[in-house]
Structures are given as C-alpha cells and as structure tokens.
Length: 253
View 1 (cartoon, rainbow, N blue to C red):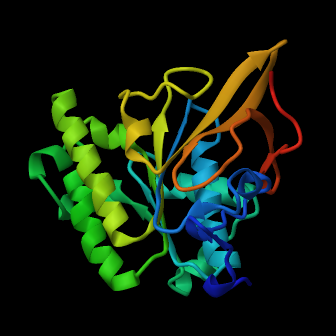
View 2 (tube, one colour; view 1 turned 60 degrees about the horizontal axis):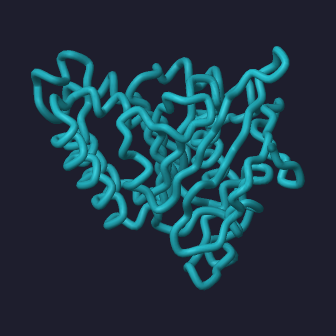
C-alpha cells in the first residue's frame, strides 16, 4: 500500500492517484489533492464505474478514507455493480475506510422537507450532510452521483448556478479530492446537461460513447485540468472484468 507521503508531488502539489489503468498517465499522476473534478458523459459511458474505482482504489490501495454518495441509484444495485468488477467493499466498510451512502434513504433527515418528500436532494442538503460527515470520518476522497439529480430541485438556471458554484467552493474549502458526475447531452460527453458544470471544477473529463460501424466505442478526454499539464488527446478505453482500462498509446481521430 502506498502511503500519502509517497504519493507523487509536483509543482501543482500532491497528487491523488486514481488507480485506474491509464488515467494517472493522462493526468501526470492523478488528481491534484483537494481539487474538484467534474466527469461528464452520456448514459452508459462508465461515469459511475470510474468514480467508484477512484473511491474504492483509494481506500484499498492508498489508505484514503472515501465516500461515494448516490442520489439516484439504490445502494443494493451499486454493490452488485461493484462485485462484477471485483470490488469487495464489505471489509473496507467495516474498517471505516469506505462509505457507500444512499441519500434516498437518508434524505428525510436533512434539508427542506417538501423537497425531500419528493425524493430530491439539493446542494444545501448535501452540504449540511457533508459538513457533519467530514468532521466525523475525515474522508480524503468523495464522489457524488450526480449533479443532475441535485439540479432538479431548482426552478431557475440562475438559482442552480449560484448554488452549484457555492457547493463546489465548499468542497474546495474542505480540502477533499472529489469527483462530481454529470450527464452529457452529446455522445462525445462535452455538452453538459445544465451547460455550466465544466466551469465549476478544477478539472473536466469527458467520457464519450459513440456507435462506429455498429459497435459502441468508449472514449475519454481530459479537457481541463488546472495547475498542471495533462494529455488532451481523445483516447479509447475498454471495460474489463477489473474495471476501466484506458489505451494511453492510442488516440481517436
């Protein structure tokens, strides 16, 4: 297991390796410690899998306590998906190193009652929960699936923009390395559902899912990463039994 002190450090600061095959090669060693990272892609592009691997690998291989918060999918379904790719979180959960939180079951404990009764969790609710949770567990890694679900709480784009940026600032102040998932309205993953998510993060990663000659082709592009150099090419990737494997030596187009 690699300790926090052994993690790569450069002019941008300490790196938080994802442990995902090929991704750390594209990002000079991983995400910048304490950064907010947005991952966008259409349905089926492996957004959830990438964020699960990031949190799980952190707990298993690097000793980083991590939390995965789902606003849409049930905990039972996520556990089934993790098992398919060889992730076994039970022992890590027992050790207090990995947390899988289904806000659908917890939503009545936090935030605005009328919204929670509709099954919605807004950014204020998330912040209230995380403020307490972070103090108790001191996680190093966080993934939230997804911004789109939280955004449904807001009646105007102006209100959504204000609350989304406030929430991103809150995460940066916590110095927790986070992945925020959002839905793309394009196959290439570059056009986000609300048209603003790519501006809130320190990095922005596109996952594409396109049909080529009758087959689906998955791609990844690191479109933005502040404070550091990064690969900007479009690379293909596969989903294997062990999870995501990015072909760093191949490019698309």
